[in-house]
Length: 272
DNA sequence: CGTGGCTCCTGGCGGC
DNA sequence: TGCCGCCAGGAGCCAC
Image (cartoon, rainbow, N blue to C red; front, top):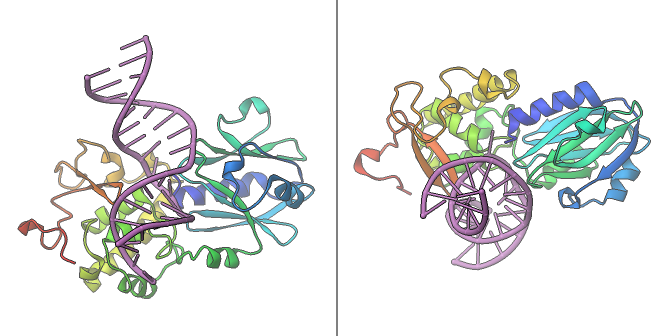
């Protein structure tokens, strides 16, 4: 699940619960979720120290440790954070558990173990090492245009490429393209300047709206695709039955009437 | 270098 | 009811 809005919500949650408290214990319950770090290294860095601030870049959450280094959290498809006092509230797939001096715990729950916990010296260094593009909420149209100019392939995949722009996954790419009225298989090279501008604006609007809703789909505007994103769902604008297609292994939902490709009337979807 | 396919994981669900 | 294959909102790696 976690794309930019979810991760931003986790960041705010971590801010509200876990800053400025001395860490007394660190437990790795599944070593598969460690990225280039050992349990011992995490314990040495964290125990006796405090988290003092947070940052987010794309789908990555970074927490500053009061010794000049940073804890990095990536949520994979099923990662989540829980702050609680009694261990009977420990979530079912707790992979990484931090205990504070007030005897509360912060758990990284991750059913599918695709999330990752690591350490880095600075956010900038982390972003450079991972070759992440600009954060999707902060990217400007000039930068996005320049990034798109270098790309071939279809727009949905490009928006989901974290090196082009960081933070957009499968769900929000569908929503952004639906709101932009652009077919997900549209070739990036064929998009006109005005269309690219519209996409840039929808990236910002959709993600900003989702953050404001704390990524709770039930609170999203009625005209959002998310509410109808299932087999048999209908377009919130024109009631046409939504189409479900696969784009390089990922499921995409779209309105075949609102999101036509420029050449779809000829039966062509690939003109590159 | 860019792109598409495979793979890592676990668990829920529909079909037989 | 039980079993099996498929699918899920991510992304690293590898072959072309």
